[in-house]
Length: 459
Picture 1 (cartoon, helix red, strand yellow):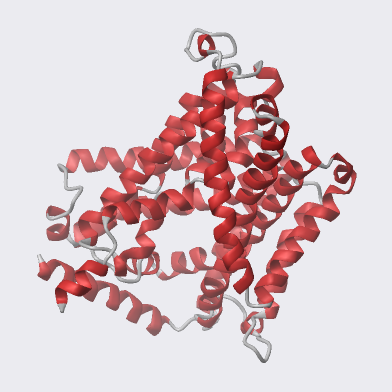
Picture 2 (spheres, rainbow, N blue to C red):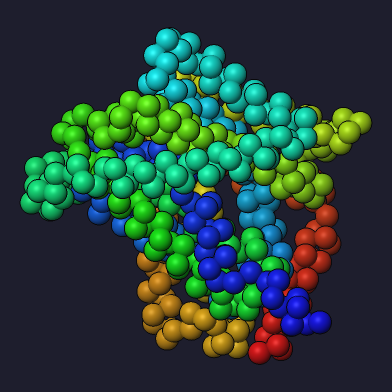
């Protein structure tokens, strides 16, 4: 019987595909043109660097996956690694997910207006309409959208494949070298900015950790899957970048979307399918997945006391309407105040990188507490090498957050400082006000520690 169950466990290849699927999508459509504007044709190198930097930025997740078998995935990792205050900060940060919804809505309009330019003057209202539509589908249960989402993912993958195959023969390969014109167009700082901007598109390779309970030999399969997913994503993105930056003069694609190049390399009918079916579907799948996937984590945050209980009010059919209304407002307000896509990316990425930096620092304490687990880890290395790894992880987090912060206008800089301060202050307040069941937090930590002991005993 155990053999039957073992066969049902996810292999390295299946876990890697999960990471790849969560990585390749809207990010490449949203941020590629902006990054080219920063660094020109060296976007290919920027994407290689971004994939590596993001892998280090989330080093704590990958290192922990090689040390322990934690059935709760990300939640168990947080319980084991973080003090209560940081658990709260991580949980409460979910309320800013609406910023991603705004970005996706605006991006769909940007691509759709290429084919239907008459909607451009009404872009804000169309974006809000799209966001509203996807929120409504979650209220209705989302069964139809779930099936439609599978179709959109299939079209997305096919579109990117066709984009690469059709575009590579039309690339001027004399431009794909460090000595060509418009390589490192804005110098070292521009290159660093492109790396920071594209890091948004390279996230997701660590998502196999969410599948820990279903993974076969997770302490080995999860680290392998993360590394494989990161490598495959890097190759795909580099190929897309070669086409995007190598077909047209760089000034025609800088700060533009992929539709500009698609129009050049495709016959018009294929170009329309790519723009609407590929780009719009890529962004739409991310929007739908983000809206549908936020409900359970946010409800858990409310149930644990980190957010006011009123946010958890539900309809008779169990729909958390107050919480979803708040998230909806977070999505539409940035549309009204004319936030650019690069600003929205910065507002989402900076708090995440700050939390990553703290978590990476906490790895020193974790290794001191579980030296035997580290000795048996998939990533076991000499102490000096581990120190260097964590230092590089901290540098990666700082590089992304500081670079993105410097591009913001002063008003947005104050906003991001306020957002981060709010997360820590409000988390501290909820603990001091007795709103948090610290015993439950302690039990969650104890459960994670028991899982650690069991996984170590199994070896």
